[in-house]
Length: 407
Image 1 (cartoon, rainbow, N blue to C red):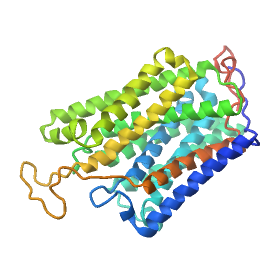
Image 2 (cartoon, rainbow, N blue to C red; image 1 turned 60 degrees about the vertical axis):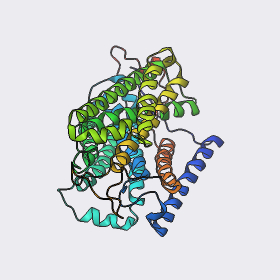
Image 3 (cartoon, one colour; image 1 turned 90 degrees about the vertical axis):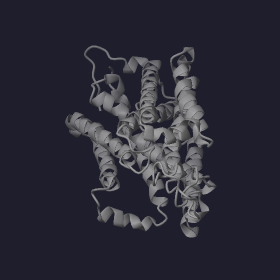
């Protein structure tokens, strides 16, 4: 490979300032929605005593999971020694940090009492996966920041590979911890499964890479920097592999539940129920987020950059549907307090066929605000520091004998 040169973008155009203004407004709207929910109480949302994790948690978990996957691009270059991916490492790490910060901000602002975060950070119950996740999330930010420093500082470049290995292992542990939040909840039929942590890992690969593709194509198009077909097509083929892997884990997860007699109720509720979760699963998750992107990426359409962007967007939308079904659908199915027994209905709704949930506009606005914050961090980051290579043209990224990468 030729020497890779990095340069911050100029950021002086009207379009750049317009993007900053748009993202800033969305962040402020999200903060306003958080203030409204905090001031009036969570009764203004669709959440209640049965559905305690609502739409903000779907946004937050999606961003946190995607953050781990976004760093996968840098890990391929460092850990697996693929030189074509090394020029993408800086942007990959920046995007990973930005997505995690956006997701954590949503979680903090949805607490109702954000100041109570101090208690969560000073008093730990190590039997709870939530306590472990505090260390995993903050550690991920620290490890990734050091990883970026090793990539950008010539004097520290000899430690670059070691930092990459640490970041690779840490992000796998982080996503395992996120999946274990649900996998360890034995009271919920939809959650109690050892398949969830590895499924969350492969979901992170797909979601993070889809976002990375969209951000990369947008950044290079708007800055008029060359982005060759070699790296783009390599990434889109890798995205197809991750999509297929997600579908495989979803198939195994549901086949396993169908084999267990006690899980037939939750499987019927998700796969053939009378609620919104069934069309979200089949149309949103399987068709829109899985099968259609695979057809696009591995057919003639996959040679078009516009269609690669559409496939990436479909993966993101399908990912939201998947997490909505997992997080909210898993709560909507009522707890089986006395399996095999008929429970008399009471005023506490303990015998309803399912718990209804309709997200409020404030929940959507908070989630969109968090996602906008992530993109705002990336937009400012590539303006302030040298995260973007000046060229990713085929001649600059295709490996050549005797060439190497320079920081």
